[in-house]
Amino acid sequence: PPRTDVPNTASAHPGSPCGSASAKDSVEWEGRSLLKALVKKSALCGEQVHILGCEVSEEEFREGFDSNINNRLVYHDFFRDPLNWSKTEEALPGGPLGALRAICKRTDPGPVTIALDSLSWLLLHLPCTTLCQALHAVSHQDSCPGDSSPVGKVSVLGLLHEELHGPGPVGALSSLAQTEVTLGGTKGQASAHILCRRPRQRPTDQTQWFSILPDFSLDLQEGPSVESQPCSDPHIPPVDPTTHLTFNLHLSKKEREARDSLILPFQFSSEKQQALLRPRPGQATSHIFYEPDAYDDLDQEDPDDDLDI
Image (tube, rainbow, N blue to C red; front, side, top):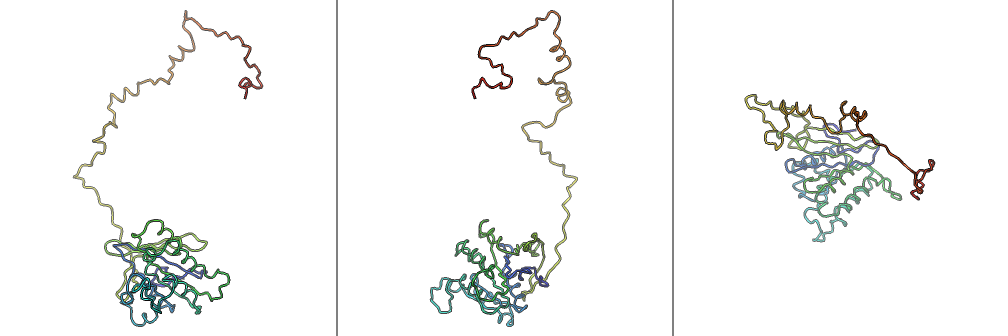
């Protein structure tokens, strides 16, 4: 079930061992604060929280959390030395994806939340297919044959800067996410458009207005009232869109009468029908005389026999 005071993004769907959520932000509405709010909610629920930090430093990400929350976070720092040039022993082989696979092969069967900060950084350093295959393997780890590791609920939270990527990578990652949150807002109030894809159910979407408190707690709010459309000023005359056209859309009274009295060539009046059907006295009549030729086909059963088909 969804957690209270939090959009349905940080928990897996019922009956599924893995839940994945993607938060898409923009220049106007940043999404790291929402990601940290969901991380805090997962930590308060007693889950193991692993942070794959690639875009900001560990100090910046932990800033704002109290000591109780920071003690529950396991931070994997890929910001200070993303390519492992220093050859430190604590660096995990395989980079962020290697750390992601190592977290999934844990021995503790308890629920785990993995926060990817961010998917945009991973897309800029890894092929899109490689990243999608890794995320797909995480969501289907329970179905891997020969895997003796205990299976626990895994929730993956990913932050994506949508404006940095084309429609192809964004669509591929969106198809993998069970919950997709797109940030927006108006008049300084943030909103989250939440699209949930549940197994064997129709997708559902909703819009939630919220604000994030200084301690990264979510405060759900009512949306702004819909303003009425501005009324037109009666003192300003309406603009006629047909003023500067090269043709006329309106007909005068004389033009309309001339159009109605016009007889089109394909229309037969009663006088024309009588003239064609009843010849006038003294008018020469015509007759057609037909004599069959030697090559004429008179077979009624096969009228196309002369075509030699």
